[in-house]
Image (cartoon, rainbow, N blue to C red; front, side, top):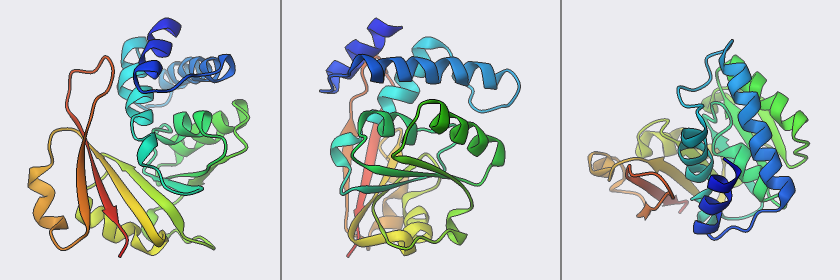
Length: 203
C-alpha cells in the first residue's frame, strides 16, 4: 500500500515526506477500525482508499486558492484530511451535518496532530465565519449551481468554489450558465472512472 500511495502521489506531482505517508496510512487504519462500528464509507480497502479517497482528494490541490479552505460535506474527511496533511500552510475547516462523521474527523485531526484543520458539525446554510473562505470545496454533495448558492455567503471576495464530480457534468451546466465557471478534467492515478472539477469564481 505504501508503494501504491507513493507512486500515485508522484504521478500527481507530489513528493511526500515519510511523516505524511505515515499519516495517510494511519488514517486508513483508523477508517477501517471505525467503519466496522460506524458507517463512514463503502470504500475502505487499500486500493480503493488510495485511489478513490486519497489521490482523488489531492488531485485538486493546484486549483486551491488562498490560505483558508472550507470542505463542505466532508464525510469521513475527504478531501479535507489528505489536503491538510500535505499542505500544512493552509487552514482547513471540515464541515458536515452528520455527527458520527464529524466525530471521526475530529478524532483524526487530534490523532494526526493537524494544527491546520478544524472539524465543524453544521449544515452549510447555518454556518457562519468571521471572514470568508478563499476556496470552498464540495465532493459529490449537490449540483454545482445550488451548491454554490448555499455556500456563497461563506466565500471571500474573489474566492472560488470547487465542485468535484465524476462524469462530465453536462446535466448541471444549465444551473451554472449565469455564473463564471470552468470545467476541468482530472486524471486520478490508478482510477479508471472519470473525474471532473467545476470551478466557479466569485464575481
